[in-house]
Image (cartoon, rainbow, N blue to C red):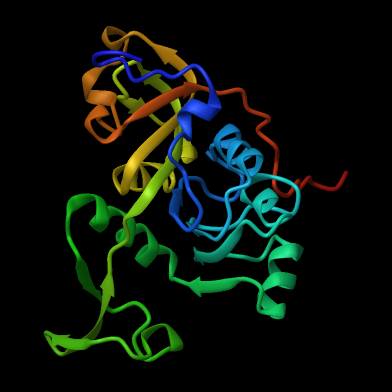
Length: 234
């Protein structure tokens, strides 16, 4: 990697600098648009006591769920956790701290963190356990709670296409949390389905500008289906 070229050749280089106790912000929704290889590299590294911020924690044997097997995650900040039995087990046993966050609030926490906004007011969660202990304020007669933004030591995201300068395009629903997560890391690593030359991406189609990205790696993806639903035969 030299000059403006941010492409790295190995997953170990992509995640270089990750240490115990760090915070990782991960893009993806369920198993859609997740950086599979980067997650696998974290497992290989054996990094522990991690705080992971992501919509959910994958499933038992795929996605972020594989990091639960060796108890590498000590805290999850998530909005949905219903597809992972090991997650449930560790939560109920007290081995895993979980901060449940409304989905829109979680997305805004990432976006605000990337925009340099330390906190914001939202009506979501007011009057529920989510709002307990948080500062409240009334705007136009409606109460709001103060939510702090999130920044991570690392952000790991998946792109459909990325150029060598780190400009990214996400495909369809794989956009989900990836654009917000990409802006919120001190070090942002993109795992791309395809890496192209800078001139090959239409500037108006870019979702994440390369200024937010530190490293890019070519990925190979399984694209597993989280829950298969088929229609019954007539």
